Image (cartoon, rainbow, N blue to C red; front, side, top):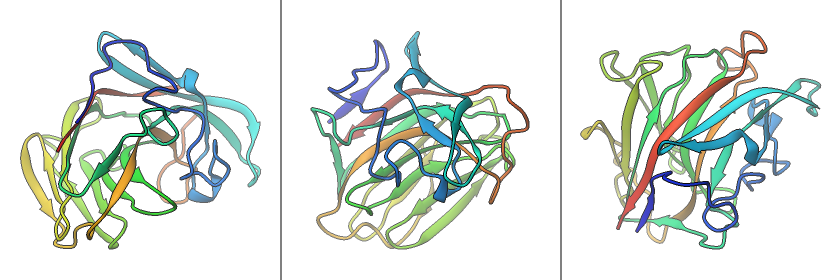
Length: 222
């Protein structure tokens, strides 16, 4: 149903929006969620079939007084296609995990202030751990495997959205079933992004050096 291979320039406006999301309190930044992010489409580039998200120190000051970091986000919310995942869909991505302190990449869903299912979140201060979360039902699982989840390595992560149970897969192997599901009628937009941790829960950036996160594809089967 949805196949983003990043084999050409980002289709801004048509498939993706990169300057705002309703998941962020102020649209393009969200300091209340422990994020230093300030969104800019220029922070997402594509080359050789890979999308690269680059975070670098910004010039703005956030509402909490901290310095912003300019970074990238892709969401289907507000785009012409307006693609949404639904109950029964299977979503998969292949990503290269970052190694820099402060990096916080994720693939997740959002709609109307809720409907969040995190395919994954990652923090390099837990180098062998992926966070897999059903935000609707408040069920979370920490998948730890140093042979598969490592900074600088590629990993394939997928989730099947079920009415009564969501199933997560890492490199094609099922690693977690939440036995909670999404409920009936669930649907949500996609968000793929690189956030910058402000330091409340995980390490903030160690210095001003920019860092990156990469994605090979995002695919949805129905």
